[in-house]
Length: 432
Image (cartoon, rainbow, N blue to C red):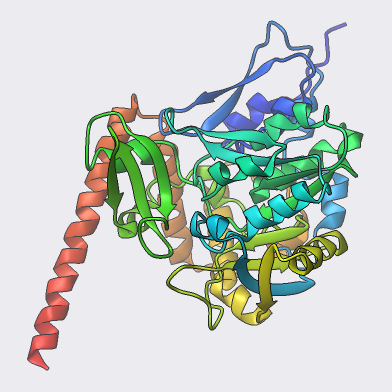
């Protein structure tokens, strides 16, 4: 009788549905899974089949391919927005935290509050290694260590791969992650039951990450030498929302944020295009930039805070009462509009349709995720297909050098077009 072969994470990788979240790593009891960086700079899991027992758990917990029953049941009526109990805007009261932050510093202030008041024994954050420029999950037990984890990383991070270490910690643990990480944590509870009451989930609003090849692209615009301390949005040297910064032999280099924005589409991983959950709907508290919200500090920045659960509400209220954060009520309508959710609905619809037309496997999401999207036009789907094919092509190039060559061509063409239209505007303005 032949051995039954169970589905595993290799199938998800082959279908380009992998989030690089790290959940499969935490499901494996035999250390069979490691992560390799692709040519373009995505982290894909790889199975050591010599040690693999073919248990299938890595596939079972994968949120890139499917949601488990518990996660399906937690999916709200409108999954593009999710349940929101309260909308707030504000900043950290600690000035060191605030001025070292990407926006308002509320994420770090909340973590400091939970650690200092012994609500949690530890927090899980993401830290950019100053030398390797790799994003890494880190367990922090002393609030003094939190400052180094501030500012967004914008690159793939297998955050949930640290869960085996988290399970060794006595008491509750707060974890800060993107939507895909929260999806993975929910799926993982099906086999790691202790996680159900252990985690406080602090979600970050996420439109997408960027491939790791974006970092050498930006730095090589300035220098071919080794760089350190790369930051995608550095508000400590320029005003909010911050420019790109990095160091070369102790010398600070600053690159205009326009360059980051102009290259986001080029460096977007394929899987990010198929994600519906910009608003991190399965978290207790969600934080991000207060786009579209009136009367916010546009010079130094503030944080948007979405309270989703009763646990999240208690933590936020207590942090305010204990003078860790200063928040005020804000408009839900403005917050949702400012995050571009209606456009997100249409883009998701276009990307899924394009994915299907390319003969690819569609993630097994709850049906209401698809029904709450907005019908995309044929032209939208055509553009989506072009973006997807571009992203797929990057990982089939021979080397990172080839990726950077295409990136420079894209950058130059885009700037030529901008220059052309800028000249036209000046001409028309002069004729008025």
